[in-house]
Amino acid sequence: EVKLLESGGGLVQPGGSLRLSCAASGFTFTDFYMSWIRQPPGKAPEWLGVIRNKANGYTTEYNPSVKGRFTISRDNTQNILYLQMNTLRAEDTAIYYCARWRTGSWYFDFWGPGTMVTVSS
Amino acid sequence: DVVMTQTPVSLSVSLGGQVSISCRSSQSLVHNNGNTYLSWYLQKPGQSPQLLIYKVSNRFSGISDRFSGSGSGTDFTLKISRVEPDDLGVYYCGQGTQYPLTFGSGTKLEIK
Image 1 (cartoon, rainbow over the protein chains, first blue to last red):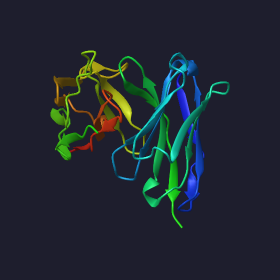
Image 2: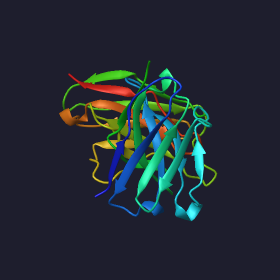
Image 3: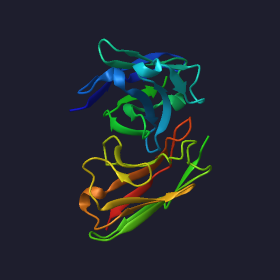
């Protein structure tokens, strides 16, 4: 059974940093692209970026809206996906989801339950 | 960026009824390889989104045949027939054809 579980969310001050984690299980982690997606309360999801699989060199793509502030990485020995967020702003307040990105047909087939990040003083 | 526009914003339907949700993209979603990467997701209250349809019309594993997708180019439709109580939530379309990946603004389905 595919499982994704985010952690690391919480309250952070504007200008601060936070690192989110996503523990993956139930599939061969290195075979899959993985993404981070966020959703401000009451709004639509926003894709943040993707890290490719082993076959594609674990390269990354980012949404221009967060490029340069957010960094996606992965620990393929522990099956963990990370999102490093720097210089946080109030508008970064959202639920952050990790999701598995299915290559070939290009869809998100499994999502975690999400972790809430609140940026406020 | 590809802008995804969904209509209506919300709709109310009786149990057993049928509804259609429209999704239009600001650019063609036909990839260079000829495929169209348009997906539909349902976000039930308090849950993360779940995949319903991928590549316009393919139902994901375990999804009822009451859900069907159609369309091409820039115009797409999700139809739900014989609506059940468990269908309530917010429906999002999403495109995977080009980066950055984008989602529609959502259509909230309520049960009368």
